[in-house]
Image (cartoon, rainbow, N blue to C red; front, side, top):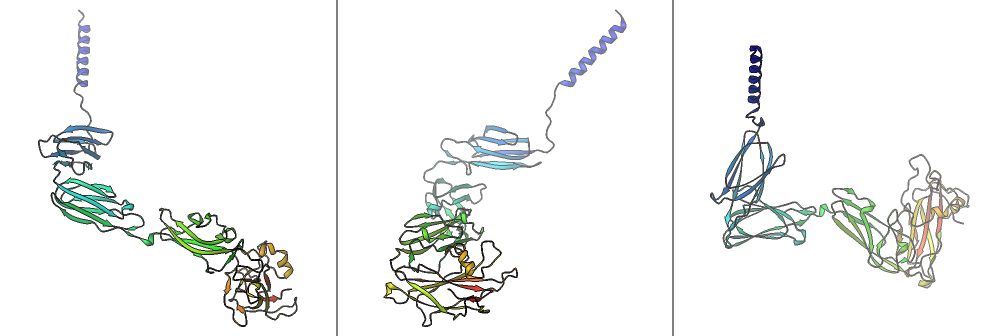
Length: 437
């Protein structure tokens, strides 16, 4: 046989042997940083079962005590299994974190199922709140969580603490710490108080008491709400309801009375914040049928000069009036109301400066539902001179333009009738007043 061939064959065989040797006995790669887990079921010898889960879809089931080494770092959850005649550990499920080069211990202490052991009653008040809580026993980790009323039987005697959870809109009670003995019943009560500061604060803006509102007469009932956490609430957080007419649809600036039916209404403004906390404000409005006879009113003061003659600058204009009310035997009307607003025309740039301009734009200037009218200045008992003094008003509008005001006077009867015509007094060049026709 050719020696060269034998030598080559021998080398090939040796290479095959070396190659086979390099593939045998392969060990898994162990992470550089690992930790250990000890599982300790008590009492020893019970052989309690458990299920352990962890990172990377790890899951292991077993019984009794054991120690697991070279575990990947992260959170592990153990769930103790039922053992006949024994109570599950408290808590039955526990989470712990494995850290590098450290050993964590899951300890599950089983107690014999003895109906004569301590009974714990968890009682958060008020009941409808269903407040959350956490129960823990002194000297033992973990704890039990729940909500609302609960009765816990077969509890190990010892000192227990119930920590009451925060509930939005309520003042949280201090933790309740009590000693529980067997076979007694121990009641843990936590009473929550209403946190008024957390609720929205709705407010109805209405200054006219129970003055009769003629049916169909539009006046604006303003409404707003402030919340300690959210600030001023938007209109969509507000809801208007009448006990006679049900839910009401407000206008842009509030509730308009012209759509209310005849009768005495309890109007509720409900405000709800983003946490679902709600509060209400109420007001009573009396809507009456308009009687056939209506009061009348006329302006008597000031003593204007010629219709086209400038009356000069007046800091606080004074309007006087006279009137009759057929429902009161031609006596004075029961209510006389004054209001005013800047006579800004629809273009938003020009103020009405003549009666002709006012009358040409009356549909725009006159509606009583216009939010730019001042509040009504009511008089239920009229002084002898029957005058009203308006407060100082701005001369310029912030853009260097003179402000021209439109003044209105109306009479109301105690029966709810209102003068069919409004009486206007024009204001020119900031209280350069022209008399009515």
